[in-house]
Image (cartoon, rainbow, N blue to C red):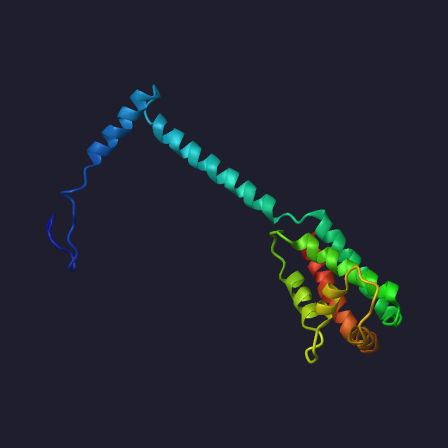
Length: 184
């Protein structure tokens, strides 16, 4: 057995430098200085730290709430995309403009928004990288086309391919629905 003050397994105790009495004296002086009952200063500090933690928790929870405009814009985009699933609207410039505007509106509402939704990011990446091979993607044409009354032929081809491939649009819609449920 080791005697008090000696090394234990190579670690030296620093018992001579710890002054518990001084810390307790400082706390007691604070109690007297602030006209608090004994231990009141500790309670005051604990209350402050608890309140600070609670306020920070509320702030972080508020920042996780998704603005309704993001949810509405995502719904509008998914509804417009569903129309393409039902019929080939790739040559209809009004449909192309509506789809593009709904994409633009969704992108605009997401600017500066902070909330967790990996499925929404997955949907955006899917649109921005579809099709994998080609000069430009669906996301490129949707962003470029917003508000214009012209339809580039490659954009029409992408929409036609989306309509014809019965697996693609349901994949977009499925990921979009998962994103929507995670935001609500």
